[in-house]
Image 1 (cartoon, helix red, strand yellow):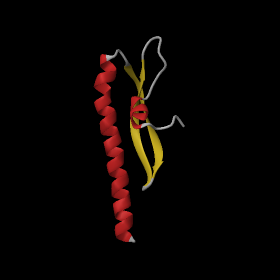
Image 2 (tube, rainbow, N blue to C red):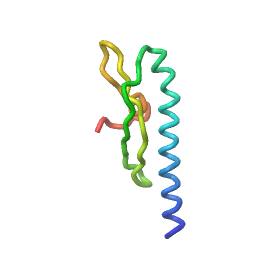
Image 3 (cartoon, rainbow, N blue to C red):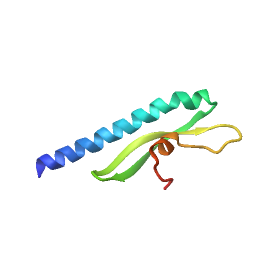
Length: 79
């Protein structure tokens, strides 16, 4: 049980890091399209191996709705 618990935690941590890395990579394309980072906030999402928590960027642009490109890229629901 201890080994299974260890690996589940490891997978959650790796997924969190991977999501934050993808968010960081999306940052350049958003800036090139005229968006600015409004804030960073934390989100948790339930996955097959448990709850993964990550930090994502929220972008704004005049005349446009704010957006979270990571959530759109990954296909995550808004809530």
